[in-house]
Image (cartoon, rainbow, N blue to C red; front, side, top):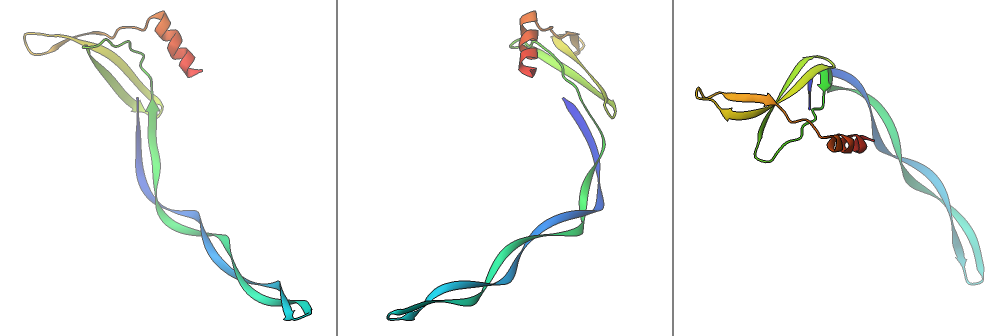
Length: 130
């Protein structure tokens, strides 16, 4: 899990765009008649795509901070878990997992640490990351 914070600023950015550009070319064709065949040329207009660049004002997301952390839990069907994620500053966050147990008489929950991964589950997670 993680969190990212940003603000938006108007900035000048360079962007590319494509424009159709005409150019003159010559092409050959067969001309003449009867037994007098010859090759003639003519001027033609062709078009090509040309990449150009311009500087424009655009809204840009500027990062104010981000942090991500993983929590390894072996959840059980029908159980309830709470993950407390705390963002402190850029690249500084923490997360803890607690299992919600029985509701107490005052309506609050009794919390216990989340179940840990078995050695097999831990190996499987490590293998998935490789």
